[in-house]
Amino acid sequence: MREDTTLEQSILDTIRFFDLYDMPLTATQIWQNLIVANSHDEHYVLLREIQHAISTSIFLREKIETMWGYSTLIGRQNLIEKKLRRHAISQDKWKIVKKCAPFLACVPFVRALAGSGSLAVDNTKYSSDLDIFVIAREGRIWTARLFLLCVSALLGRRRVYGEAHAPDMLCINHYITNTSLVISPDIQNVCMSMQYASLVPIYNDSLLRVFHQRNSGWMNRFVRSSSRPHAAHQYEIQLFGVFAFVKNQAEQLLLEPMGDMLEYLAEYLQRYVISRHKSSRGRIVLSYHELAFHPDTKVPAMVQAFGDFFES
Image (tube, rainbow, N blue to C red; front, side, top):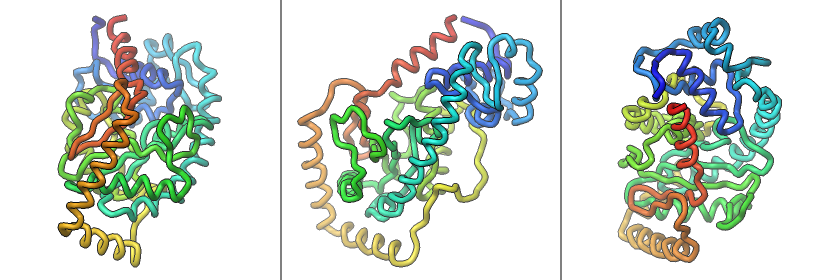
């Protein structure tokens, strides 16, 4: 095992981690997603400390190179031009998400929505889908998912099971409930910590902040994320007026015994459909507190690859 705990090592670890996704980083992105899995230093790192280390550290100079404000491993400078193209592609994909967002937020029992995956870090390809993370009301997670699938289908943006590539389709693949915000221990690792730290609020940022607070204990073992200011994100939407009223009235109706029956039928129907093409690969979770659909997840391989850094 390699020794040490310096800021320079954490910066290198962060650049190495994102290199697994072919993604160079700016100093600000390193600061926002600083990996501390190999560090015992618990002080809050300032952006200027990151910038100073990148510009002056001999240790880093031997391992990374910087161009146009982006840092990458030596020999990987070609990723910088690729990243600029992907950033531009991501902005077009975010425009699609923002158009769909009000309809998704209007769905009964949807409590929060966030952009996830490559979309959240502006690193999408033309073939990338649009990953969405959902927080639903306790006791209505199956109903919320059924309605979200229907709405995304009506919008012409639903990703269908089995599609190898679904560019610009909504991939609503992870749901948790508002009373079970702590992530399952089986996926508390550096990759998932980075993914949750990078979530971009689309609807109800305040609940997403609570989500981060509830998970900060285990996430901080891997990633030291900078706190965002309490200001609306450019992609965040709000429900006002008639939209909020209709959603509230629909929820009141569906909280009655009829709603319990709908939840039961929604669960039965979805479990039946899922069982027809449930994969033994990846991570599939079907419970009253979490629904996760990641049959082709690369997380275990990424965790292994990143772990190899500590053994080299």
